[in-house]
Length: 443
Image (cartoon, rainbow, N blue to C red):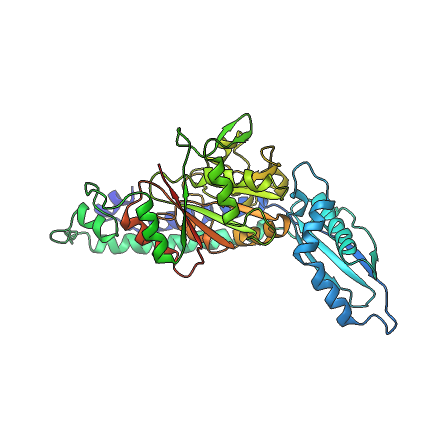
């Protein structure tokens, strides 16, 4: 319609106004929907009484107790005290401990997406602080379930923001269309002489599709590890090539089980001194990061540790099928504010029992990167002794960068089909990130 009118020499102003109005209305509608669908936040408060010493209970003394109240030891004790069908659900809340300005007690505050979770988390940390510290601390007032949220997005405000964003986008579109009309007679540029698909492939750091690999499997992993200053651990999958498969909701570890156990020990995933958050990411063809993450979760949970397995590969979402659990709601739904912590957690009975979070109702356009994911990683680190993230493949996904940058340890899994160019590019992406072990899939 617009193009035809312009070609005939008519005034383009009405078409421009229609574009502005349409985009403004779309922006306002999207903003309103975002504000209405937002998950409210609830806050609950409990107190811990602090007996005064012979010299009186000063503020500095309360500050020290408050700092110890937010320690990993207290979080682990709280996890043990809170009973829940899925371990850790009540701990997916923001918990803070601060001294009362009037002295004499500590204030334990918990923020969560559900009122009962907020109250349970505040009470759990209150009891955990007293259990860990003992005298001179004692239980104070218990938390009550909040009736109203303390924080929620304003639907009218977000509608106004959406309206402004739509108008801005409309102005940009109108400006671009007018520029394109002015330069319509200018022919498009030809490709650079000699440039073609093969040149593009080589310039990106990858071999051309028909170029045979120089190295394969373990050799590429060794080259990769050398560049990172890491060691290589070999993994030998079972005859079917799978590390973990799903059957009746239970993770099955086939012939690779001995390798997985030794790898878990090598990565110190079954001891208290190991990392609390670990990301596994694939490099090259034949690397099953989701399967290895699930196998390591089974191995670590078998020692009685509180383990959580998270599928952070939103564009793929294989974990739910592997473990035989519902794929949604999951991580994507939680990050978008459409699901509570309890809704995304799944209880898995394999090993000693662990929790899992599937990718959720996401597609190839879903993204992990963002402040909400970074906050979630920190929160999960307080609720669980070990959190394993099945990250997207390291090459070709910006989400992989978002995951590996916020965890304690990164474990690249180099497939038997990896090429030297892929290893080199992956090593550049991991520059500055601590990688101690590279896993090579050897067949």
